[in-house]
Image (tube, rainbow, N blue to C red; front, top):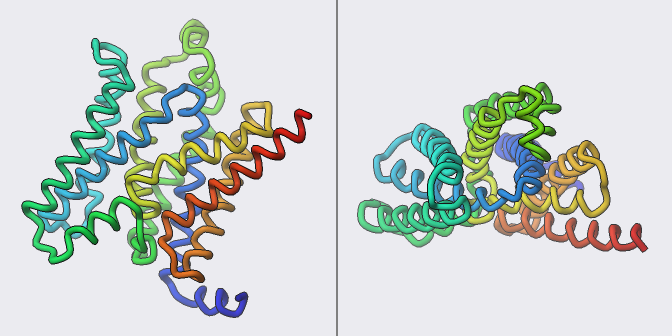
Length: 278
């Protein structure tokens, strides 16, 4: 097995897949903790479906770089969801459900009506569940992901204290001079960017697993916010690496394999948490 893995690492696409997978999973885990604690983790599903709809539009227009449509569309949707949930009669969860279902249905409709592909069902399945898209990344895709991931991590590290305040007590944060609407907006925007990048990794239907599972797993055994953040990040990176390598060796869908690994990790941490509390 180790000889087989060593031979695979001689290929650029395997190295690109691991680099992108590690970066995306780390970013998703960091912001996943915030979203889970703010009880807004369902936004991952909503934005992932918006990204699917944007991808459908990009596909039928024949763009060589789908991110030119997916990234800005997902960011705009994140801003609209934030504003809608705060200032209208439509509550946050209802707004997410409405936008999520609409984007998913319109995306599938567009692909069926306008797509020139002979295998629409296969394209849709690959987009929804990830398939092997992560193994077709180019050097340009990897550099783009590297740049965006560095920006996300730098933002999180530099504004860690303010993010901590906004996550646990927005009223207190605002009373101390923290511009909570601005930080909530930035969190929503960075979450949208992570989701847009993660489509190639696990597919649009499985993206929320990258956000939710590592955070919930870490919360089973860690009590402090910093401990949860560190444990969540490390666990997500390890699970993604194991998932990608297992998918290559077993010829299984990459996205589903990563999520299955995250699920196993959660079950393990759940049992460990029960033992610690006993």
